[in-house]
Image (cartoon, rainbow, N blue to C red; front, side, top):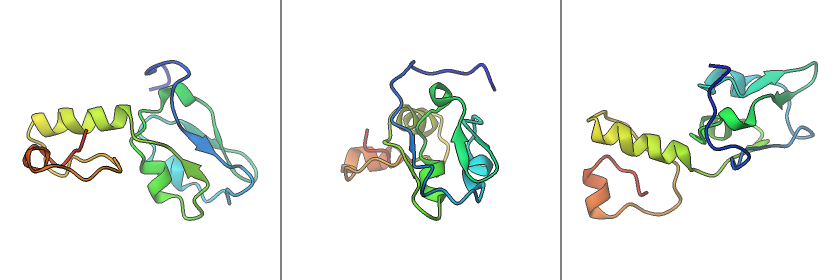
Length: 107
């Protein structure tokens, strides 16, 4: 997946390397191999491959990673339209009744 890119230079992904403990959880959960580990912490190696799903930030035990939902939210909409269950994004807006029926995404 090294060649996958979304929109160039627009992703909201941020990593605070001073806070990162190097646990490697982001490497485990990232579906597009955006991170790698060095001797003491994670580093972002391919920011443009990030689909902003939020898995890294939700699983970081020290909150060293932040990302706002974006393209990952679009993936939740697509998964919902395909009838897949548990398709959701990390939007901060509460879903309306109509979006809740379509899979729970508020986008």
